[in-house]
Image 1 (cartoon, rainbow, N blue to C red):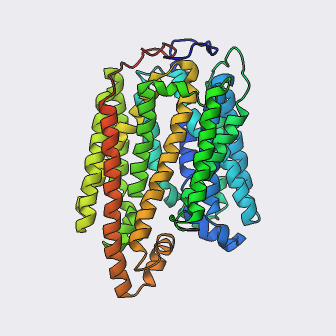
Image 2: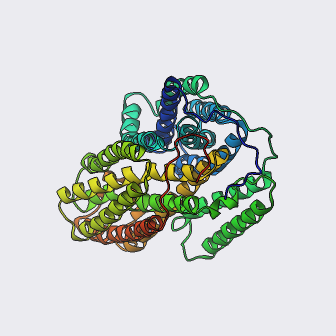
Length: 504
């Protein structure tokens, strides 16, 4: 049951006017676009950054610093926005993100670039959470699936367009413009959110759970570093790996102990007694685990096993994006009309599980590209139905005064799920490819690294990669099937028709 002791935000229970809704939603869409693009647009510009700034040994931290800071701050933004109002925190997040982008573009050393990327990530964490939570301020849950569906479509397009746009900007201008391009778009988003979003702050501010925040940040950082360094800086089966794992467990245990005793905890553990919230958050992590863990290495499979060029290998992912865009929009509209979304969640997760099993079979048999296109299209259809409806279900299950905290917690756990998924698949690949050649060099070097292989090495690598990726898809299929079973046991809930109506 919701905790009614916390101060309730006083807001109009009716939806926001259409004009204001469009203004806020356009600004939120821009923020989702910026945060999504910046997680991958930088990758194609990394070689140029090294050429200008040096510091090759620390190159991976350009990506890792952004990932760490953006993940750690998501629950904090959600919690603070419930107390001080979404608008105020949203504007702060945009300003921090733009400041980080400007400083990244002016960096004179790799050290500066890494620090400024961390600053940029501090803002990006807020963009992701508050864009989704702000929809909850202006749109009742019944109408939310079609808005969240547009977010999913934007994220899908950004995931494919990011590397392409990064390459074009770097070639035509310089790598610095990969960051400068955020400034005009962010300025428009800042204006739209500032003008359109009107959210009140709670009646009484409570002390920030500083100890809980520090423990959560430390535990998350330790976990992400373990996943990033495991199998690379040190073997998984090593004293260093065991020590870091023990540190992660100790920090999160201390965090849970603190949250049970804090006056106003960063993450209220009582939320997890709500079965819809608990299962929804768990399923969001499992979905991201399965998606990233299975598809992040797929383009390289197309190059190694099927002999495609890098451009064609990237184009093979387009059916997945098209499927996501299609069902996220159409499925969102249908769920809004029906006022219920469990059926869409089940269809989405079911299609994803079937598609992952199909991809495992296709990878094992080195099937022709046309069959991969069909399977990836089905995977995208499932993702488009599942992701936005899951966000809506979690937000619909909690009281309005905890909307930001619930959204922040879900985004946080989802990010961790993705990181664990990539690490798990990376471990499978590394274990299977340890014999033929260096998998890390192949993954980072791409076409240039492949060209340096002898025909015998290439044949060995293709065979090993084929069987390794099959294992990744099987693991992801099992995880997605478990997510389907979790949702299957949920009671059907009617989506509320007003913003502040309490959950049933």
